[in-house]
Length: 579
Ligand SMILES: NC(=O)C1=CN([C@@H]2O[C@H](COP(=O)(O)OP(=O)(O)OC[C@H]3O[C@@H](n4cnc5c(N)ncnc54)[C@H](OP(=O)(O)O)[C@@H]3O)[C@@H](O)[C@H]2O)[C@@H](O)CC1
Ligand SMILES: [K+]
Image (cartoon, rainbow, N blue to C red; front, side, top):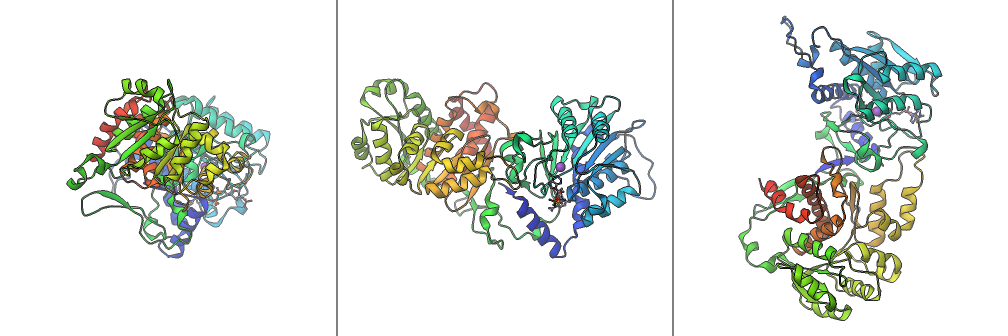
């Protein structure tokens, strides 16, 4: 798991590191700038010179400090009025030391720069010029100058470094349209050598660090970047909402302050059976611990090596998936296949009598039961080995189905509610009131808005100031309201439980899987989570692991994926995890 921080948490971490005396703010800024330059040369090795330099008494400089013979690379660095701008001055200086021609623009008042940024402004000013842009509204001349440079029409600028705003952006940017257009054009057209690569320092400017939304929404602007280089921790805004598509790549460089942090660490440990698990018990000094619980889900525990657990199929649980009527069973069958592949010991599809033949013709390892209505379901559930249920995929939204949802909710078993079951919950407050802490709701955006209209309204309201209300805020509020785990789907799937624990399963940057947006993929996800709950995973953990594996299956299969492929890709993914 990678932890994601808010801007306030990052500031707290930075202050605590500085107060501990381990490092100064100026040193942090130098490391940040150095990290950006290192990341640039790692990303584009062709920027690294190959010519040997003469060896003198001093140690040889790093490879990237040797520009290609006969070629001077050119960079434009746009610096803003805060410490993000300060990082930009460091980057400018280091690029210049590497033999680059660097043009620096300052959008802000040099006299009003914060102290560390001011020092780096002055260090740069000793070796290069600073072109001042009228602040806060650049003049037409300013815009002409910068956009001309960036459009590459008459120059050979290779890099544009966006150090305008980072975690301190609090209000919309209106005055920089032409700059941003120019940066964005370079990014969108991926002009390579014909135009500059755009590198965002910490965050693409215009983006809210906490929500990933563009401050000002459609009125506001944000730079698009080929590479974002952030410091110490990724921020929520890098993966949520527009943040996940704001850059082609995200690199997090360490600032060397991690050890002194008063924050909660998620440690991987092994229990006495050799099973990997995440230890959530490490002490936190930080008061609001849920702050630190948003993160990507990755490298999670999988197979148990405990031979006692392999003794019987029911020791791996029994999942019951309820299906709709004739011709509507495909979704439930895919969920059942997912539950079985993910390791539930037994999986049964329960369907109305009229759909028995259809289902029997399509199911083999999955068992089949008649479940005409709620009474029959209660009867089936007298079998205590059935420990997890899934209702929703292809279920239908009539009176029979509402009764089934009610009976399932009152049975007190692990319960995944998806699709039609979410519609039923949003239509019936009494049903909603029956939700309990063994439930997992898996809404997409539309379902979320129907279930939690007040929360969705807050999330949809224009983000006019930062930090803006985020999908993490929304999922946490929803989990509290529902009293159960909520998995709010998207490329930035957010999973939260009523305690405030929260994870983001982000399928963005190197982990993007656009082909996962395919019919039936959500049914398989519901099945994965149900299967994991049958295996004994707690609801939140089942939702985290299920969502993570779902994306991994899509990535393993690749383009051309259809929902049926997801369960079939699972064995390979699990084998790789074991390695
Ligand atoms: N944390 C760390 O460990 C490290 C952090 N580092 C770096 O510091 C960055 C954070 O610095 P920061 O806090 O100074 O914020 P930043 O984004 O530069 O801008 C704030 C300025 O912008 C202004 N302003 C805001 N909105 C505006 C608007 N719409 N239009 C115009 N102005 C606007 C705002 O003015 P105010 O709101 O006060 O009027 C303020 O002056 C961080 O992203 C990282 O790059 C590294 O150096 C080292 C380690
Ligand atoms: K920036």
